[in-house]
Image (cartoon, rainbow, N blue to C red; front, side):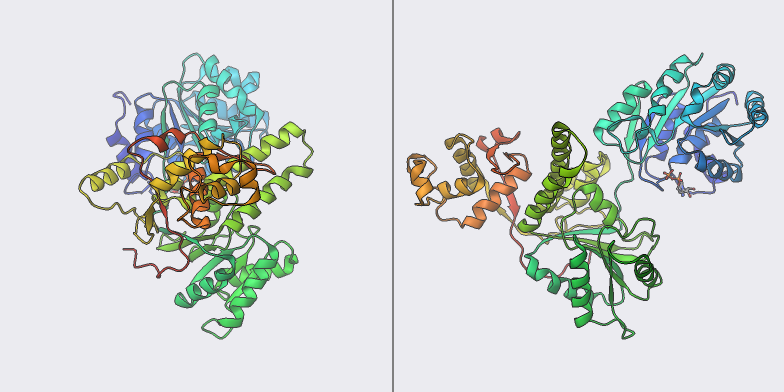
Length: 555
Ligand code: ADP
């Protein structure tokens, strides 16, 4: 080709070579940047279509595209798939004889290949280096780019050599880094360690717009009834109920089956957990996948590698440990693209249990005290964002996508316009917050007073004492600490203890306060504390929902 390729060429290739009508979110921007010679970092979930982002440019650009991919076992499949689409592709790895490798090198040098897959280790061999220095490489695609970061989940030291390999090439190619998972820290590492130059960073495709997200605060003893009501209303639908313990899965499955039967008169629900024999687990899983038992009540041991497309709901009986865990489990709903529901049930007790687990969990690991504390801190942070999800009054879809680093400009603009026009914003897919099913109450004054009280007590006491001071308790410890003399003493005497405590917890979830961890937690100011004393401080929170009318239609 002579003139440089354009987006129109890419569009045409999408249709002719791949047979797809439209680009998926992110693909077009990434391809356009590459064609313009700009480095990219694309973060898109598995199945979102990352391969196309480098395969189309590979076809349109002169020379060869090198694809760095970590798993030799997957290379053959990737190459076969590319060849099937009519893209001349080959791989170079240790499964080949030197002659086979020579053949691939020669074909690439002769311009007969568009894609060459290699593992990162290969880049260090002199044979490959000498080939690379002679070959016209227009693009290098780094697959699973998060492997370069020690903050990622699959750090591979071999990835650290890629940056140096790129720098040593006679002509620097365009570099496209792709991954399905990258927190901000990992993204920074990818850019720095690969040496990406002014890259377009595109995080997209994380929103699942056919899922309806619901969060419901419910005392533990009411959860079973709520779930049974829900199942009765959606008889015959397939769903997963995730529980925190093995015992709960069995008790809940029994409770369901005692009160509801499937339409064919057989049990509606089956339990699934790691304590069952492999045979029992297999049977339960098969009955669920074949739609014989529509509901499975499981621990998080269930779901890995299960491909069931018509799961209509996922209910979490308890709070998961992180947004990652929650989204992975909830995301098993609606794989077929049909509207599906994800409901999270939680209460304060669940949080306490999670916190306790988290502090004991890392105890027996073979780590130094300092490392243990780091692990615990990271886990606390993850849990706090999960709690934030339970408590937020904002859109749940956007809470999740923002968490994964996705900035949805279109949705932001839409929401802003709606707000300016005095309308309510409704997310695509729907969630309990956008659909106006939550009642919020203005707690600005309470929050301001709490903030003052934290100041009064010098950021030195726990939640219980803050509440007692504010409600003007006459208990012994109040007298002992001279609480009566504090300006905020008794200022919230007309509010219930539960309410004040709840606002404190909410403020902690939102960053106005920080509650230290450990055996004697202390309430301190959070990073946003100063906002509470601003004259225009406005603060709302969800009213405690005990029972709520069922969700309206979500269209
Ligand atoms: P990832 O690498 O992000 O996990 P893949 O590149 O394997 O995802 O793509 C997942 C599937 O989506 C593939 O079957 C691919 O052909 C398909 N696909 C990719 N882009 C599109 C598109 N624009 N329209 C329809 N299907 C697409």
